[in-house]
Amino acid sequence: MDKIKSRLDAFNKLGNFLNQFSLKEIKQHENIPHNDLFFDGFKHQLKLAQEANSWFTKDNLLFTIEGWAKNLSTENLEKWIQNENLGLNNEKNVAIIMAGNIPLVGFHDFLSVLISGHSVLVKQSSNDKHLLPFLAKYLEYILPELKGKIVFTEEKLSGFEAVIATGSNNTARYFEHYFKGKPNIIRKNRNSVAVITGRESEKDLDNLSEDVFRYFGLGCRSVSKIFVPKGYNFDHFFKGMYNQHEIINNAKYANNYDYNKTVYLMSEFDILENGFLMVKEDESYTSPIASVFYEYYDNEDNLKIKLHEDKNQIQCVVANNFIENEVAFGETQHPNLWDYADGVNTLEFLAKL
Image (tube, rainbow, N blue to C red):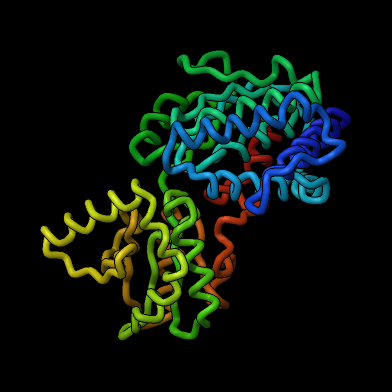
């Protein structure tokens, strides 16, 4: 457990380092170890991440960093691991295949493997390759015993004893075949939904706009579909979305909006739109960028049954006193360390290796 404790302390110090980079300001703090080596370097990595992926705006990058700075507090880290039997088994080499849809999307897996006392072999997405190696280097300065236990590769994975892989439904089939002989967690496409009852306050729907638009809707915790009661007045929904209207000034988002709108109109689909967001009636959970699908319901109990039956396609259900394990409006992009992707307890998996 001493090894686990020293790694907890190292990640807490990483959190203190990240705390210098917030949406409010980027400002050097005193008494941050190795700031002379890493502060300006991380500013540069944020700039490189922006240049390499135009979805990674400065605002979204700093939002991510702010979230991790908060999660890496001693209190949160200790609460997260308190019920797990970590470090009891021999150290294993765990491979992680990371997605690249939002900044540092694979960081939770990276953290989980190292906190569990294992070594990590990381294969990053080309869409998100700048930040994590730099933060790993900072960890090695904080805790030199991590040197040699964190490896990044662009080659074919080899020499690993377990794997955590995240990808699309198509790549998941490949992963399941390729890694069937190893202990594994394989994640597929998931989306998040919101249940609108018509009883929401203006503030609820304003908050929902954050769940819809943060990361341009590219995250699995982004709301891509809403369930609305028969006869719902979408004016209320669009009014709540309006505080995000400046998103259309992002060229890549605007191009996707124009393209998807053209496809819908040429296909003669009925859509509602407000100049920066389209809503379309559709049973699917995965909506294109700049659009949200909706589905009507006329019975709340039947909707609860449907959400339960489709739980393997759903990451979060945003609602207000509607269903167990719901997420409050505006909170999907603020997960705690114990809010596991796909509901699979990564620490428990790693503890049993």
